Length: 116
Image (cartoon, rainbow, N blue to C red):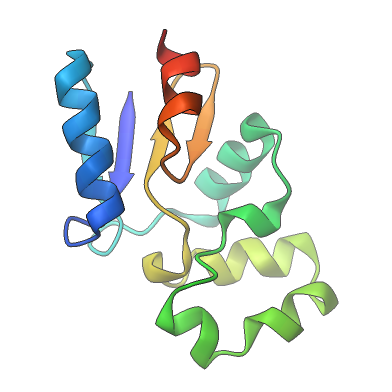
């Protein structure tokens, strides 16, 4: 399993603590140091079953600075994936990626259901 996070993010810290408490083994990837590529994001998005918009960190400073709230609807999915791949801070985190699932953001009941 791959756990993509930003170590300074408190939600990521909670998720990691929860994973450790469950005894789940995973590989950690710092999204700031190793931003996902457009192709990785495309695969994760398709496996997640979520709208692409859910992959954006809408509460992030970068999202707000770029005015993406108003711009995303005018962008193609390809343009959105390319944009996400330019800066890890635009991506909602943490991401938990397994062979047959992708979880975006940490909601404990969802993660329990996925890993239970």
